[in-house]
Length: 79
Image 1 (cartoon, one colour):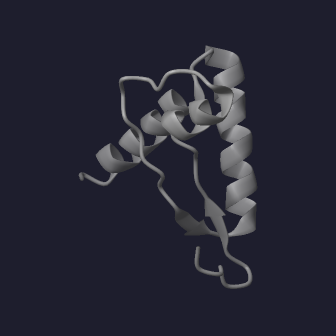
Image 2 (cartoon, rainbow, N blue to C red):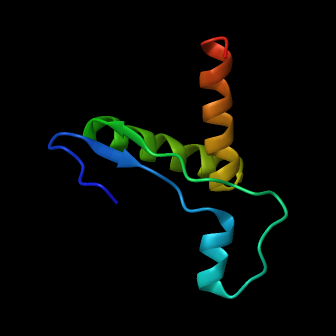
Image 3 (spheres, rainbow, N blue to C red):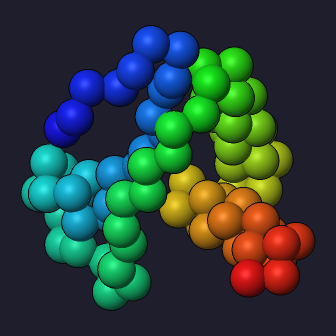
């Protein structure tokens, strides 16, 4: 992994397959990929806080919440 410049943070998630490999469980049928975003540390903390609040309130898993966030971003920007 390349070094990250000062003042920049990386947000990423582990795929279900990688997470479960450590737990000894079978991989889920839905494939996931890691997305790295270079953003300020304040945005990383805000993103993590928001994500965990949504998880606690809705009962969705982490990947579902992150998929929804990315999907909302793409729709907002017409992508």
